Length: 282
Image (cartoon, rainbow, N blue to C red):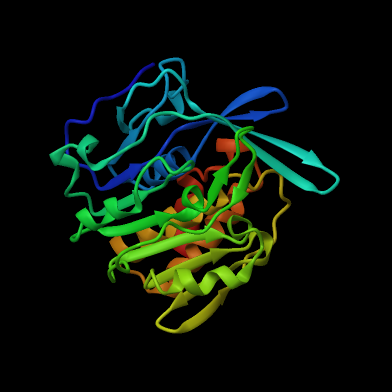
């Protein structure tokens, strides 16, 4: 396993598990950490990743990203089964928890801090320790629970003692809610900026008691995996780092997410040329 240890300051810090996704009986690299990390790197940022996986996990696609790995005997692994009644998702293995004490001092000055759990491996309150950063939370990993067989079901967001501050944006998909829109309002009370992605029907932004619909240009979908992570990362970099307006940032994010569904797995992460082309248009 070729990991570049974290030694220098980073612009974009991600905390979350690298995963193995079982696709047609083969393993594929996945997780918010992978999709968001590679995109941020291709957008020109110095990226740091705090994760946990075993030594056999192939991380060559993450070359150029500084990685601190809490070595584990297993890598978080998911499998999807498709039935007449819909998709069943199972978690087969889970790596180690991730906490603030694993983040080096050099990385705590990151401009953007992205908590991207896939299996409740970190506490959302970790984000309160970065008051000067733009805080990005991918909610998927907190909105799921699983039974003794590993079958995943939607779950409420963990109870919080206080809402998040104005520097915070949270992202989730309608599937994360089990298609139940009644769960949106409790989340709006926690997050000053909440973004709901809805696949090929676009996204909704909830901000300052307003709801804004962001359309998406339809593409021939090959694989939607990671599109929400692409959206979140592109939005945060444009909005919090480049200083673009909220709606403008969302349109860039939507365009890049649309590109990502046209190719399978991490092959769908927009290239540097595709990123530049979209940025120039917006």
